[in-house]
Length: 94
View 1 (tube, one colour):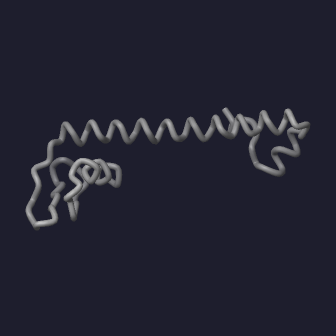
View 2 (tube, rainbow, N blue to C red; view 1 turned 90 degrees about the vertical axis):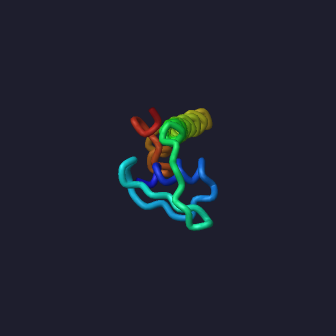
View 3 (cartoon, rainbow, N blue to C red; view 1 turned 135 degrees about the horizontal axis):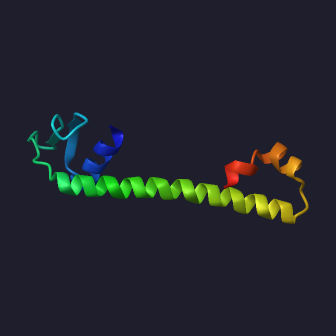
């Protein structure tokens, strides 16, 4: 679970290795070889932030495509030309 590991690394910058994919089996070792005690409430909060950022990035990408399509249409390109040249049209821009 990459997002879990990413969230842990963002909170514990001295984490060297992270093994496991759940609360129950995750072991985090710091740069001194010590096991870290994980604050799971903090990790869950960070996971929520990461998920929100990922969702926003998807929305932003769709909005940029829609904006590009609109600008190309304003320049006089047809639907077919836009689709053929750039692959942006219809549901991809919604």
